[in-house]
Structures are given as structure tokens and as C-alpha cells.
Amino acid sequence: MSYALRTLGEVPAEFKEVLDNTVVSAVSHRAPLVRVEDALTLHAIAEVDPTCIGGLISYAITMLGAVRENISFEKVKNDPLSKSGCGKDVCHFEFEAVSSTIEYEVGDVVHILPGQDAAAVDAFIKRCNLNPESYIRVEPKDNKENEQSCDLRNTLKAPVRLKTFVELAMDVASASPRRYFFEVMSYFATAEHEKERLQYFASPEGRDDLYEYNQKERRTVLEVL
Image 1 (tube, one colour):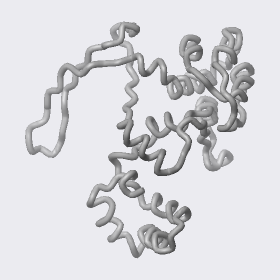
Image 2: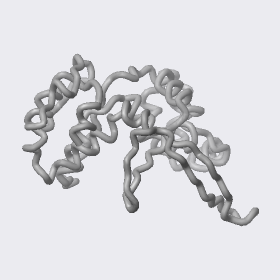
Image 3: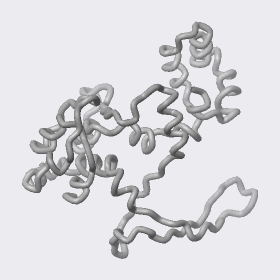
């Protein structure tokens, strides 16, 4: 845990107090950056509430770009298990660890976090005119009605780099967007004809046309944008 937090890299300066006091608070995405090892001591780690440690671990997993990039695997086998034409694609994969830093024992559980094509992520961020190095925070829409555990509250309130969030939490290059996506887009459309079309797609009357345009053609979020 201490190794993971020491190698997280840079976080907003305001998060120094959060880490030192193990209290989550608001963080500006335009804040200057500090090294995590300058913001967190082993003494502070020892005083973390055991019921909230999962939040810090989840934050480490999400933000730990440097360590994640050093843990590499090479696919050595991809054998199909399902019969041709059965409608399912089930395969047996085998990987070999390329990184020499991996240590594990029989019975350990591995957490595989799939990524996305880097070019698609960059194209999405550029199309939305976002700063990939800014920090964002995701929170429940209604904290009163949605009672959250301590782990989840801390995980949601922890700042995360925008590009990391898009890479690991969004699907911009394979999944078709939902109807609500078009409804939200209509609020940001500047051209009147585009706004009307998006509102139509989001309405009950435009459901069939939306299916033809979106799901049937398997358009992705990036293609729609």
C-alpha cells in the first residue's frame, strides 16, 4: 500500500491535506501539483480508519499509471472453446508476465482492468475540447437518498485525472450510446437543426429512427460526436 501511494505520481496540492488527515474534501482541477510522497507519510497511513482503507486503495488503483504501465503481459495462447456458428465467442487465453517486478503466489487474485485504444481516447478528449491533464471528481447525484459505504464515498470523492477516467471508466470506441446520451447532447448543440434532431432522437416518437441510426448501425460515442 505504501509503495503504491508513493509511486502514484502527482496530485493536486489541496489533496495533500486530505492525504495527511485522511479526510476527503473538494479539490480544484486547476490546482498546482505536488508529489504524493511529499504529501503522505507512513505515519499517516498507519492512522487511516480501517473501514476507509478501501477508498484509498481504489484511488491508488485508479491513479497508479506509472506502476500499471510497468506491469506487462504477453499473450501466448488464444484458443477458441466454442464451436463455429454457435453464436458465442468463448476463448481460452494464456499470458506470460513480461515485467520482472511481479510477485505472486498460487491462489492470488488478479484484477484486470481493460483499457481502450489510445488514439480513440485522444480523439474523444480533443473532440470534447477537454484538458486531458485536468482532475475531476465523480460524486453521487443525491447523497441523501443513496447511502454510500465509507469506501465508496471516499472512492467517488477522490480526484482522478480526466484522461485516466476516460481510459478506464468510459467506452468511447465500441459501445453505442443510450437514448439519454442524445438528450444530454441536445443541451450543448449550438446549431438549431442539430438540437432539434437530437431532441427528436431522445423523444418517444424518435425511438425507431434512433434505433436505425444508432444501435442497428452500431455507431460508437466517438462516431456520434
